Length: 448
Image 1 (cartoon, rainbow, N blue to C red):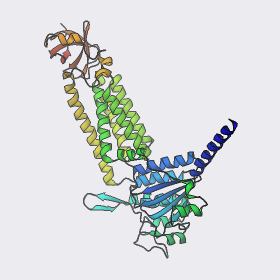
Image 2 (image 1 turned 120 degrees about the vertical axis):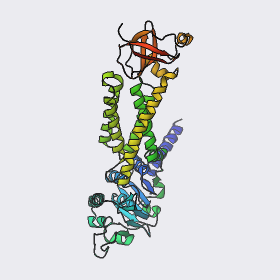
Image 3 (image 1 turned 180 degrees about the vertical axis):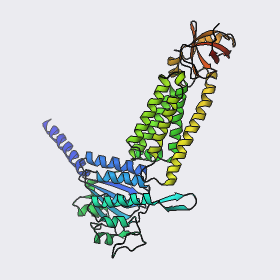
């Protein structure tokens, strides 16, 4: 028994040692275009490297560039990394990829590797792809300079990758953007050498290939990539706003509100991960939701609409501010404005259409969830036995605020009703003017 226990402990120790050794180096692959999913991937990879106690992170770059806002977020992650980082330029780190490489502590080139050519471009509806406006150009130049300075490299070389007017003797002349080869990078302090492969790089650093682990892209990274696309962002916006608007019009809280909240949460969760949604976006969202909450549960008919409109505007600002970043081009900004505006208009129109038809249904949207707030039950058997028109002229009071849908009390009976005048407050005398079975229309009751 003692011998078996000793053998088991030894095996467990060996497994633990081998597992720890296998994570001494984490390899992150930046392949293809840089977008939101890549930021999520780098964030998770760097966090895992830190948690595992890794000694080194290698960022293998084979990218033609991509979204500058995403590259800026990736740059911030790398500058703040607690584990030493090496950028391995495996063939190319162009445009936004060059910024990611500059953010690493060490840069190594594969044979034939190149880095640079980072002038920001934008899409013009008349001219196609053109250079971004000077304001964006200036910001990107400063971003490259600051990144180079943070890593102790000549900032003018980084600036020449963005600005074709920068001249560096024996490297780049006026009118041309700088793209560095491995040899040029080594000459001007932008490369610490070459390596034929990742394995060669590891050997040169004193690591065995078995001590390195390639961090694979996960499902959540692909989900983030999809959810930050314009198409899905528009869908989440419409569904989220639609749910909020319906909740403003129907008493209680039900499926529409839950679905709307989930869509809003998914939108902001994905945009926070890619670094686009900041505190201002969250503040707009929370302020808007608070205003909508007061519209649904607090304000009466005299106040109807104002708080809800303010809430929707704030939520819209939250959406817009989380879809654009400091380097978003004009076309993308206009597209974001169009998506938010169209989403708000579409959600309002659909909500009005839905609510106008809801009372014709035995179970309004929200069904059992809403029933506890409105009638206390989803279906009244006695109500189904009455003939249509039987209740016309019956008087009662509004048991809830009617927005325009709500509940009315008529003696011992309580029915779901819709107010033809639009909105009345709780406790207002009402009278049934139409009775179609499960659809009862009321108006204010005149005295006498």
